[in-house]
Length: 172
Image (cartoon, rainbow, N blue to C red; front, side, top):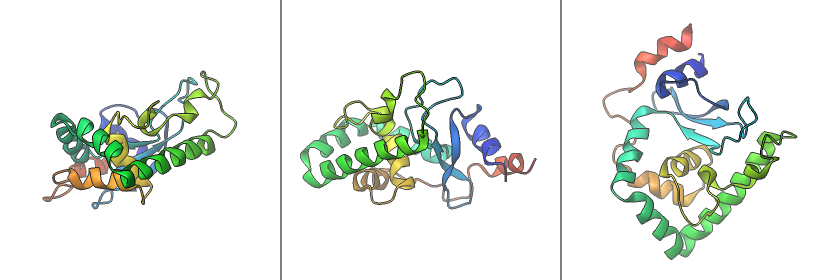
């Protein structure tokens, strides 16, 4: 299966900084990709784990539109266990980015390798719930991300794969 072609179909564009599929949906198609820290032009790509499943992307977008970023940012500062989970995940994110980059330092001389989840410079302010859900799916044990995912209404389609028509792209 050509995962890159399927992901391009899911996104409606060629994926930038594509590394590999990190998580598949219950129907077997890409749901989360792992991105390399720098694109082909050497520019930083701040998001290590990227949601590609159109259904899950839309479901998280609805959560964000309902004030989810503000609500979960507050929870991450008010709840000690969630704050600790975010701190551990941010440290893991930085370690993973350094590992994925190897000796490459890109146009920013490696500055973005120390960014938090979703490229955040301030880990206590959640920038994008999509990135936290993707991180939780790709790196089990991230409690804050798991709880955000639990807050998503119907993360996977109940009536079949939303990307099933893309399966043919993966066999070309």
